[in-house]
Amino acid sequence: MRLAVVLEKGEDGYLVAECPTLPGGVSQGRAEEEALRNIREAILGWLEVEREKVAEEAPKDAVLCHVKVSL
Image (cartoon, rainbow, N blue to C red; front, side, top):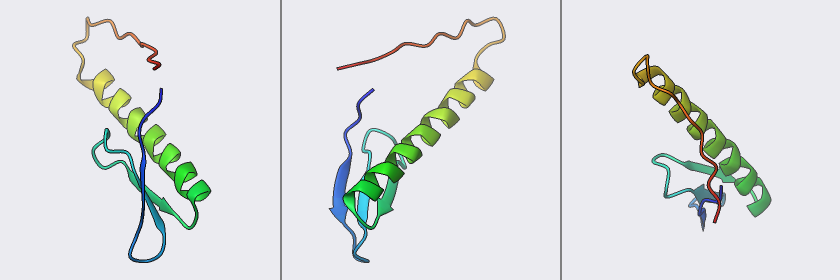
């Protein structure tokens, strides 16, 4: 899966990394490499929480499937 990430210099000098596709998908780092590493972790955490919510909210007789997406 590939997601767009926007890097911008923050007021504090850190690079802010935002994934506009995911509400609240924001992280930061001192340099580009750190910011990208941190946003990857944030994205993985976001996706895990969403997966858990879907599993909890799905009807008991529902079948949950996973689909791999690539561009």
